Image 1 (cartoon, helix red, strand yellow):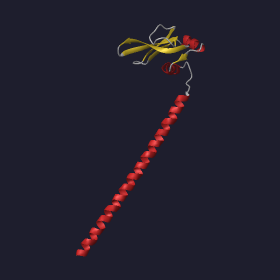
Image 2 (tube, one colour):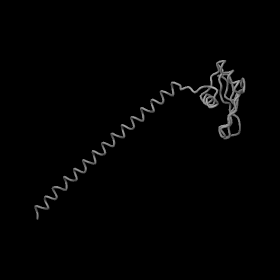
Image 3 (cartoon, helix red, strand yellow):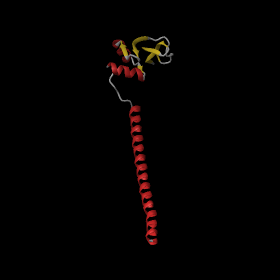
Image 4 (cartoon, helix red, strand yellow):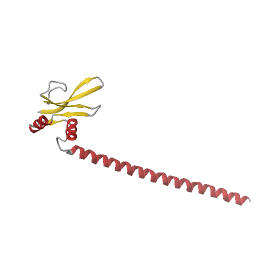
Length: 136
């Protein structure tokens, strides 16, 4: 299977990438079948050979996630929502709802504890006031 992926080059900590078409079993920086573009993440500069990329996609080449996002930004492919993204967003929404419910529960418990402490303090001061009035 042919993959569209990024090939790293450049100095240490100053990486740039070439967008290449390569066999899926070959190494990341191995010899590509064809170079299709360039991407610099520091300056966000992107140059794409649109005709060659469209030809490779029509042949069945599969882009990696990062390359897919670059192609979507370049307007070569339409943005698609993958099932994994949908499931992930649902899980995040469920987690937010659970956290909000837990916060509401903790707030209600704290409020009840504060009211109980206030009632206990009032009850403790009432007998002391009665003793003081009885002594007088």
